[in-house]
Length: 234
Image (cartoon, rainbow, N blue to C red; front, side):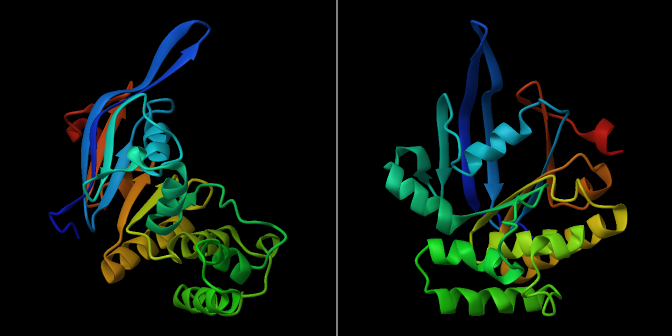
């Protein structure tokens, strides 16, 4: 549940691209406050700017203008080395396509971000096993992604996103490749993790049924937020 305390503040952010000599605004002077502990849904048509916003929240892309503040700190004022460290420790990513490394087992996939962040291999693997236990995958430690179902792969991906205890978890269509029942299970897992750990989730989704269950929903249209969601969510 939202705690009423701002974790992230997006201030007049614009992201522009030049295509065939024309300037295209993927996002145009948007403002957004994300509260600590909330599950925020972002909806909108393809090309509206949802994924662009998610990439900038995750410090994977820089705004053309404007600021993104994380706990009051302008993340893009950081040096590149500090920004990479911030990204590995404070941000978790969950993608529609899982993006698991096929040659690694489930437990190795989960442990990898912890090792990159500086934890020892043994410590990372022990933590990864505990996380897989918590999502019902204790019998799948040594299975490679190709031997896991879609829902199991997404659970592994969520564990990987959470292993460093990030304050902010960004999910881009995390149920997009799953059937309805499995997608519902993944969202219930996200809601329970949010409740237990107080982590903040920002979720891009086309699923309006799932969006209605989130703490709050914002809609992007043509690179800007739409004021009213009543017509969309009714």
